[in-house]
Image (cartoon, rainbow, N blue to C red; front, side, top):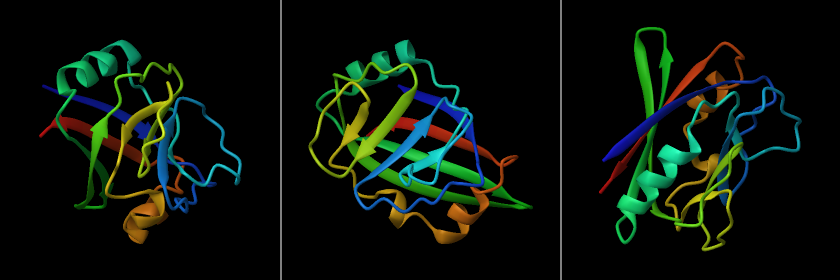
Amino acid sequence: MGYRFSAFGHPNIRAAHKTTLEFTKESELSLEGDCIIGVKANFDTGKLREFVKVSDGKRIRMVIRVQAGKKMLEEAIEARPNTLFNDNHELVVRKTDFRSGRTLGMHADKAASELDRGMAELMRNSGQKIEVVLETL
């Protein structure tokens, strides 16, 4: 089972946090949100909860894609799903084992600061579409 959603870039995306990354449904972003890598996310919490339930006990992969002209930039992040996820506005992936309703994945192998810097730069464009595909491993 897989799930996909999209988000958009924002001029204040820094992708600098060392232990987390986040997508939010909010359209605005301050410079303090250094883990946020996409705004205006269109994920469906109910469908994500189903995905997490089916994936429990397995690892998940989050593939983030950004179109750069004719070239597609892509990052893959693996994590353990969190069955407590239930947030309607934010989706967080963490390198740590911290669990909350906002946490979709824990024990991730990458955080925002480890994303390709070219991809992070493209994410600073408010018109940049970001595609996210989740799959169970």
